[in-house]
Length: 234
Image (cartoon, rainbow, N blue to C red):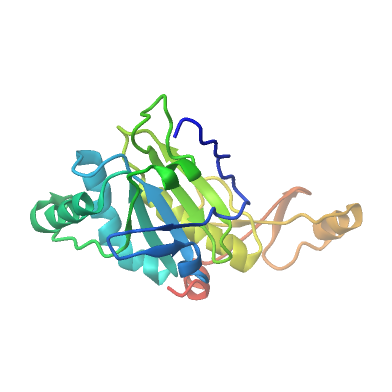
């Protein structure tokens, strides 16, 4: 493995393709999920407490992600039977923040060789050279990487932020806007200023209904939560 060199995937690039065995059978990634958003996430190891809390949370939110046309795909460098035993333990024994009896039905990739983890830059040797860090890749329906998050092994993920990013990316695509700091559905959005001197001048003089320009480069407008949810299928 030391002789294998992989360029870490970057935002705006096509998601690297691979085939793998999972707890839901073999998959061809990302081809099997064409037309859907994908959250591909890695965890360091089965039967560890932080990972267990995250899987309980992901499992409890699976229907919510599905409502946003998003599939979850997990990964660790453990084997198939370890994965299965761990998911059964989660379902039968684990309770976290009132969530219990959680049945994990999204695929969990078997990556004993660390091939997929290496392909996606999930192995950070200074953190741990034999297991993956907590990586999260948001992949759009065209198979392009749109957002990447990394967390260290000792820090669990922020699931409110994962949900916010997914909704935000879909809002950007569907409404042609940008989103300001700490945006939540229902907050004002940023309107594009224009791509030429004349377009910017026209934009400031005639900003459009509901648009407020603080300066030529910073214009916002309301985007009601109901409109976002209706467009995104919620």
